[in-house]
Image (tube, rainbow, N blue to C red; front, side, top):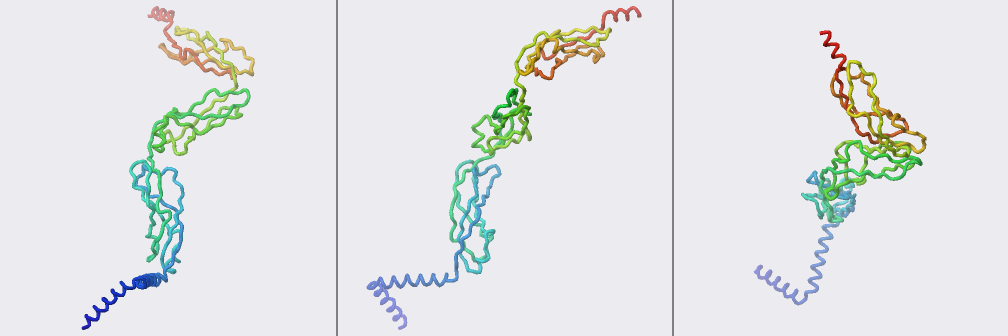
Length: 328
């Protein structure tokens, strides 16, 4: 009997809904809204901001033009729980699992392990971020000095060189290093200088660094402006000869290219650059190769010497050999 009444109730309810659907739908929606309101009456929202963190799986990869990103995080919870939250606990992050260079889009997550219990994340803005991933490589490459400006009046740049060879090992992004064969140094100004200038090499591109050698300098030789002149038939002389030896030179003279400052009245002749070999340094017979080092005036700069070396042959003097034979 009871089951018949229940069945009749639902049957009448269904007929009533069919005949009057609008009041029923309105009542149903109001009930849901009331339920939701009651269940959330003690729940509040809190907007916090945190700095995006990047978690990389590979040490060889990095993010190009990585900039600080502020992430807005909306939290839901009771008032008491939300009071426990501060910005130090807001740690949004992306997990980068790329294995090669390229563009990637990653979803932003919040590390909820720092939050109090019963706190829920309802919104993260932005929800994702696009990054460009590149790879760190090493490459041997030539340096190119970038020297600007002009020295003081009456001075010129004689030479520009590095303390080590110009080829160095650098480290930087694959996207940059893969397409270049030379690297410019950062600008070095010599405006108004009247002396040689030495400075540490810095690269124009800050994404690239020199790893070998650990230190390298650029040397800029600034000297008084001068006139280039070739001096020929400069004599090579022998001093302090020992009578028991005979001395023979492979060449008796050499040539040199010199630079004479414009502001001097020097009249250079071969005798001014004579090269003197002190024979007292040689105590036995033999063949000696000697570097030609001419006498130099303080106002001169010698750039080329031909030949660079001279051969000195020392033998026993014949008169001494005859005396030894007579004694025997």
